[in-house]
Image (cartoon, rainbow, N blue to C red):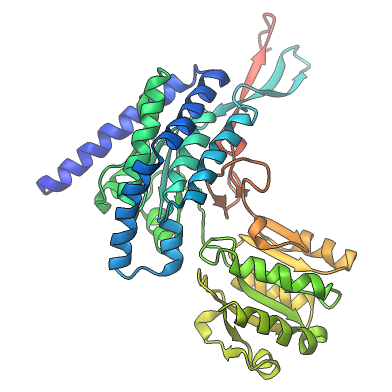
Amino acid sequence: MSVAKEAVFAEIDILALAARQASRELMSLGAAQKNAALARIAALLAEKQSVIQAENRKDVALAQEKGVAPAMIDRLTLSDAVFAQMIQGVQEVIALPDPVGAIEAMQERPSGIVVGRMRVPLGVIAMIYESRPNVTIDAATLCLKAGNAVILRGGSEAIHSNLALAAIIREALSQEHINPDAAQVVPTTDRKAVERLLTREEQIDLVIPRGGEGLIRFVCERSRIPVLKHYKGVCHIYVDKDADLQRAIPIIMNAKTQRPGVCNALEGLLIHEDIAADFLPKAARSLTEAGVVIKGCPRSCALSADCLPAQDDDWGREFLALALVVKVVSGFAEAKAYIERHGSQHTESIITENYTTAKRFIREIDASAVMVNASTRFNDGGQFGLGAEIGISTTKLHAYGPMGLEELTTRKFVVFGEGQIRA
């Protein structure tokens, strides 16, 4: 092993051990002390916004020099609006009830013991993510409120931003007399650090990767620790024959164009053949005027000159840009089959006024969020009332969909007795 590799491994080992110790200390904190630390984070973010944005500009400039796509630059940039959202997200987490310590489902057993389940922190969470430095604040505040220590490893493209945000978090914790090792950012961009992190199963309880398909596969293939995947967002809208077409176009436009580089943006549009001749040209015209490149099936291309022929690898693709595929389908069954083949279990939406069809869509479509007459952009922890989210799980163990405070805890059994012994 090279000297450089040994140094990286040693650094990660120290960081993981410190996180485990901090997680034990967090178990004794009440909601008031945790909320005070979060309030301090919000205050320091506001106080040092210009300093953090200066560090962020270094990351943005380097990304632009490398020719990074505009959608990725958007995710990387800590604009005034994003900064305001970060601070608001912290305040929303403060306002949420603390799940830790809640005891549920108490029942007396024939033996006389009383059994319940108490919500407890998961322990130490390693968060591995790309581009979006605001995730550093979202993840840290949620993990801390839920009583977890967190190790944050952002992408190399955001290293200046993440280290600046980490300094804010650690300063806030220290000021509130909480072990600052409860929230740590991996200080190196060396990929060997991630490989080592994924082997520390004795110190880390859960890994959450959040980013592109390559990152997710890298983590899953190398981790000795349970992985909860925030996988790609290949999201669809199915416009049913019974849709209110006046509603449909604004929903589609919002889903595709509001922020095309995020995981809950629309990537595939399915249109019932009974309405396609009338609706598809109108929808295509609106999308094209907004700068969207439309890649369609042969029937779509025949109905609209705005559609380009889709290639084989366009179906099921996460564009993360102003582009999407369009397919004319014979009805619900074909739409369902298409989603099963090309979706990523992230977000699926139907536009229809038919109650029976809507109920069937909700029941039969397998995704972390299934919607009726609404934009896919609503699949978000804040929009669902969870406060800031740590990610959107597209796996089912132990969470499915946006992960808020409750999803960052587990439950242990608690037993109350009066001297009972088992016969």
